[in-house]
Length: 326
Image 1 (tube, rainbow, N blue to C red):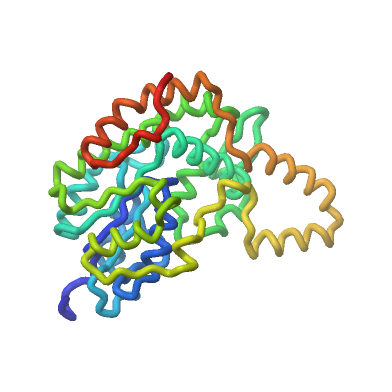
Image 2: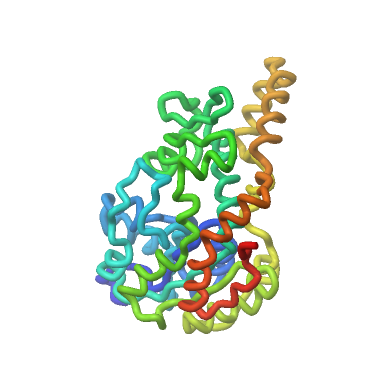
């Protein structure tokens, strides 16, 4: 790479979200032969209007001659998404990646789509508390107009895209209602459909396929496979490789400097008894994964079965432990 050429990725993590991408990203960031920003940029699906100079600056800031420059976008896999009405998902993301980056190596990690759906739903429900949504009866309603002003103090770099996506969201009271009104939660698990759009543009040797159980059962082997795929030295961090990332599924309220300061102020004002009742209720309702009925689990497994079968054929992954219909 010359001094005049832009600093752009030659490797990517495409997703799928809620499948272990954060663990993957955290571990690869530490590799001495990989340069990667500290945050997901989402250029190809959210920020194209900011231009290529804006995109490449994230990599120029961290690049020090490493052979691999990595862009990790947990939702790059998806070509469209009905969840995000705020956006226009008619873009040819694989084609744009080809035009901008040429021929990058791409890593994908998959998870049982039923488990991924439940995790995604739980994460969305927690957003009501975290991003200052307001309650309306038995529905939880996100509204940019009605959200508390402090909602926009979190993750300032995301204002105008992810947070507006979340805050403009109507999340019904139950999982079943949510699936009826937001079918993209289901469609996100049709991995084969999204993957084939990439295979129409890039050759099969550009892809490394992983499955979430691999991370849990043999994380060191996963790191070795990735290093081999990227053509770099085998490396892993003992602490990182055994860490569990993205534990937000087990709690509803964020632990942050903002909340600590805010709680202290409310305590001085004598408002904590009322406040704690509200927060405990919110935590109980939003901080737990929903119970999946046998009937709904069977319906979802039946919908996913042909897609899982096709994905196994494309990737060569053993997905026999994923849910199957009765």
